[in-house]
Amino acid sequence: MALPENVGTGTVTGTVMSRAGVGRQGVVEFNPAPAYVKDAEADTFITLETETFELVDGSFEAELVATDDEDLNPPRWTYKVTFRFTDDGPGIPAFDIDVPEGTTRDLADIAPVDSSTGTPIVRGAGVPTGGTTGQVLAKASDANDDTEWIDVEGVTPPNLADLPDVNAGDVSDGETLVWNEVNSEWIPGTVASGAVSWGNVTNKPSEFPPEAHTHQMSQVVDLVTTIQDLQAQITALQDALDGKVDKKPGADVRIAGYGQSLPTTDNQEGDLFFIPEAGV
Image 1 (cartoon, rainbow, N blue to C red):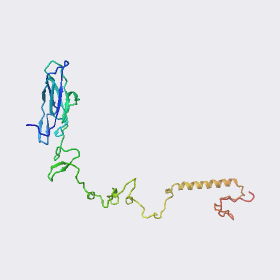
Image 2: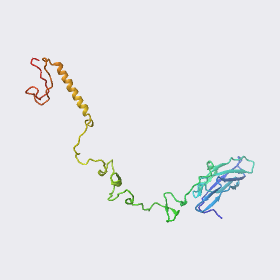
Image 3: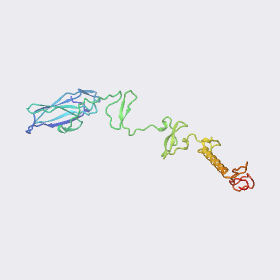
């Protein structure tokens, strides 16, 4: 009975000779790290035994079960290579190799690897083996665990309008879906260069210009500071005038105003001026 058709193999060749150029005598053994693998596609357990190949004039060729076959569980395991010579020459220490599926490699070209029994793959119920890159798992029928790998190409995606919280009516070319906080739904809109649809702006004033309203002085930038500065300037100017004008006892010097024309009588508003007593 042959192995299942889906089991992959790889080929390893090699030659061993003495310093005198004579082929070594004996055998080479390939000992698989795992004791068995499972072929889920063929519903088969495959036991893995040590395989021995005779050195003919120092050369051999070995066809082995591939260590990276994804149809087998576990994949990515290794073989330990051991030479058993029957002549008087020195031995070669054992080492581990992998055997990729579909390859033919000379043992002298294969870099030794760390020994590994593979990484077991645990598949849940209804997850078949196989599949290729880009395929997805889909129900094959209404029965439980009846699934298959299918190509995404040609599969019709769900209609946006059938999704919850989506209002895709009257959508135009170039529009995207934007979130509407008021209605708690996705609606068509255009978001480009930071632009936001007017309908999506929240907390807008109800009237334009805005309704009449008042503000605290502290809410107007630099208002309080400006008033305090002006008061300080007026006080400083009054103090300067009081110190320079010779007044009669009881007389007063004050800032009378700041209008656009000279006053005609005392204390009348006009350009900034002060009123001294006669003789000053």
